[in-house]
Length: 400
Image: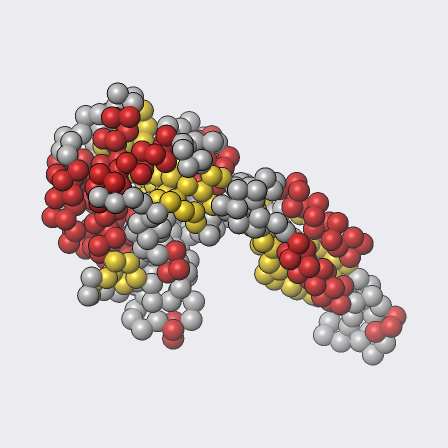
């Protein structure tokens, strides 16, 4: 298959891609509340003639084109964060406005833009009557913003759906990504002794202990080191919440807690990170725990996991990275920028936990994620749809 033919179709369908993105941006889909947008994506996939369309037990949509023995999965999470301070938005965050080569609204970059490009890639593969070695699965997954990768833990462990290769369509500005830091969440529980607020010397103030603990963790963050390759960068630690409670507003607080967002570089593990916090806090901490996520999704299926998401990366010379580079060169006549995400994706499960080769290529900019006035470029949508449609042909060639 010639790259020119794929490019031609992706350009012809650019307006359809933008309109589909606008359509799904207009449907709010916060984590656990994705049914409306899943149903609309299901309708579109059936209209476009995908070979198989189904909804899994957790609520993600799985659509297939082709019937080869190997599985290439192209993935977009379709849940979004909230809108935050609405006064900072210049337009309705769910308007889906298309103007001046941009699509506007919450999720336009993170990451419904990837989903819209996937729909078009499936249409292109159907137009080209793709019959290669791959069943190309387009997965529109849920709950990522709350618990990245859990949707794939469910698919792999519960439904035994195991990809051979995996593409995340999180925003990369149409660069080729090959990894990112892992992350985990921790809670630090701190105890004091209550006393009447008029005689604080009789108690032990848990709020003050928590403040000292927060400063100790600030110092720990400064000591964290980058990975040896210096590709993923240093791990980080942020105290994101600090709470203290007592019997009343006129009492010395006897309970406090810190919530920690810890980013993990290559070689850093859950056990290492927990021990570092314990060592930094010493007797200030009663206990350090990794919370468990079990918020039900829209299908109300009981499921959960620890809030630990492993680091992952592929070597630059990995065959799948090279297939991505070849796809980009053939389509766009240039060498792609190969880089990594700053934030976390479903790759934490697929590659970090299960070691399935993973790359990233997506429309839109990482800096747009979770920000007001979110947009994505229609040009990016067109490039991404071409990339997803042409990649199976490159993989066929490399495995011939």
